[in-house]
Length: 177
Image 1 (cartoon, rainbow, N blue to C red):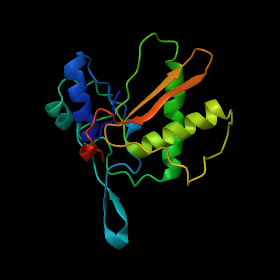
Image 2 (image 1 turned 90 degrees about the vertical axis):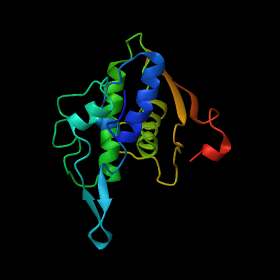
Image 3 (image 1 turned 135 degrees about the horizontal axis):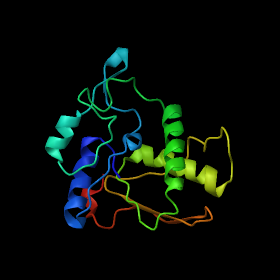
């Protein structure tokens, strides 16, 4: 599964070339903030994001949901706050847990800040067993470099093994960003 943001689609393309698997785009795993342009004193202004046609022209093998149309996948929505990002991460976790019974593995191509939110939700729900409104303190950040790999394993009982976070051993030091 991958984000509809262009950089994630590029990464998914290379993985697809090696595996023969078609990436499935999940709009909800996009980067925190959405697609926007910072306008100084006006603050961030939402942009449309790539359209269905643009995405399929660049990556003809991706599987797109019907919600991505030719107005752009972000469709000029407002800048997404952290609070909204955490709620979105909770929805993604709920969706992922519905797939636990599947024997297939899931690779997610997403973004650093969203992965931080996702891991925080998983720690809150699975490790701490806390439900309802609770946020991991802001000073704690689960950093993810570009192309950093995080491996989480879930058991049918709901247990989670964190095998590694943000592994970048496949990159030479000068490429880590």
